[in-house]
Length: 209
Image (tube, rainbow, N blue to C red; front, side, top):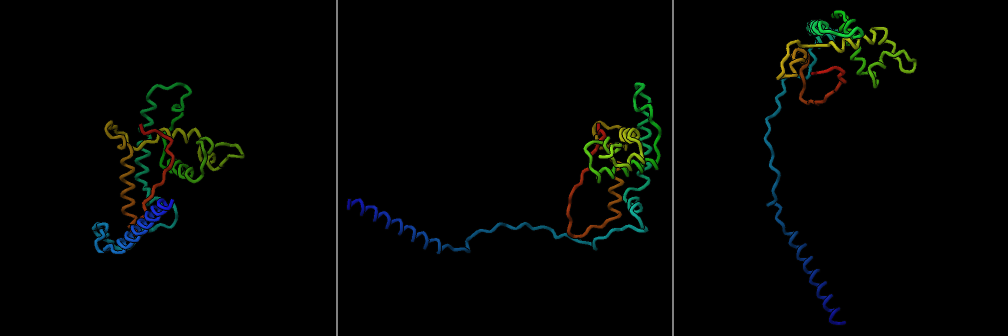
């Protein structure tokens, strides 16, 4: 028993000695030999001027909107939508088809249609038809006062931005809108040094293909 006790004691002493030796070794580490994470040399951001909204002679929200979404873009969309709808109307349809009710749209009507689309992004409802319902619990009366649900759905179905077809580039259908809006943003706003890039999505109820 004594020899066993002595062996445990000797073992404990050796562990203590190793721990003390390790502690002393740690204290003697040369910190000057530590490596540091290499820094990446980045070109400094050259800021020219201050952040500025370059909009002149805009006194109301609709004035600002017309600067961002110019009327010549509306004219393009109206023309393309009417042309596309005429091509569709020339195809055979059943008697009950909604296409039999198609009438050419105008700039004034399209502006109303666009305002209802924007309003749908503010007032959230799970189904399109619910915006035009007359149910007192669910109704938003402004929609029915401005446009019927059948006309809205027909405009939404015929909405078109580019008639030319390109099987190799499906995004070509929205190129005119993208390019004009990009030009407007570049012309109307000069960003500052600090930028926060985010995205906002609006539910698209039409078809790309």
